[in-house]
Image (cartoon, rainbow, N blue to C red; front, side, top):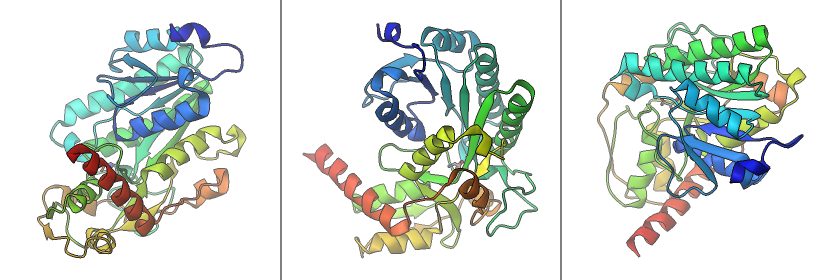
Length: 326
Ligand code: AKB
């Protein structure tokens, strides 16, 4: 059994909830590289078929099941990646609240009881809503979100801050922008068009965009998002002045910008704009983010801009679709 070798002095054992999701899958790989494959416990309702290493089927809404896994593997850090995202959440508001909040409260309380050293909690640009300046949105802005997902993220940030101040549980958090990667498909987000569009371009099919051409949003390439999360978890505790959640920025672009970038490779790529209910959500979010606190406190710096990301996305999706056809 893997877990008999875990848990010796000074060794970190990392548990990831939602490990089969878009970010969870890439994060799991990076954490395996950093800590060793036997020290990372990927958990989800369903396994990620391509993943290697330890996997436990886990419903994070079940506190007893979560507690058993944390105990068995002598977990020292948790990355809690379970969430129903912004667009999907609007179809199931109460379920979204129950799952997003219930799983977080389980993670926080079990971490407190079992003395887990650090917890990572992903927040989102969805915490912002009306009454903000949408350009370079400051770290400390009004948080009146327009979606249930955003409401859970504001509440979650405050719970993290509460556990830090009240129980000295070392909770750390980032407000992710839209995250774009080739490794897996996201599900249920407002920023997901920016992943789907690359798949269509590489398959040389036309794309129908659910946002208006000019809708500018903060975005980030997945490698930057994963690196940011691990860098924040590695930062010395005394450097961290924000215990709700850090703004981080990668790039900001609109559908027409990403189309122009893709057309550098596929000049005939066709796009039609057909905005739906997600337009209203996007219109309530920042266009760009001020991440100076993250830069000052723990040295955050993105590596990818739009064209660099387009090159990696197109190259990797081309290899993927060629291998599927072969
Ligand atoms: C979504 O669109 O819901 C997410 C997010 C920005 O948190 N990608």
